[in-house]
Image (cartoon, rainbow, N blue to C red; front, side, top):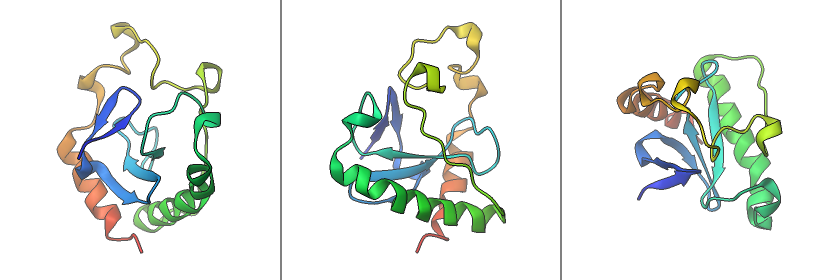
Length: 126
């Protein structure tokens, strides 16, 4: 079953953690190693559109995903961010031009590399 993050279809092979309302996946174009995304199972336009069960599960799921990332990447710190709207840095669901480079699949990691990282992270999920 394919999931969706904004306009992007997400293959199960890049998902490393699932709860009933949320899923965590590796990033196509990570800013730093371990840059992951925690997303609701359905697409929402903004944070205020999340259902109560999704909001209630957001930090426990993010805490679990963060623990996995810290263990796998042997990290000592984490940064959590919610990008809710253009002014907050949100890039998914926005119109982009080819010159931006971000929207170009050539700049993304391969599905194989993402699947390998997700599988490695899954080994740390408890």
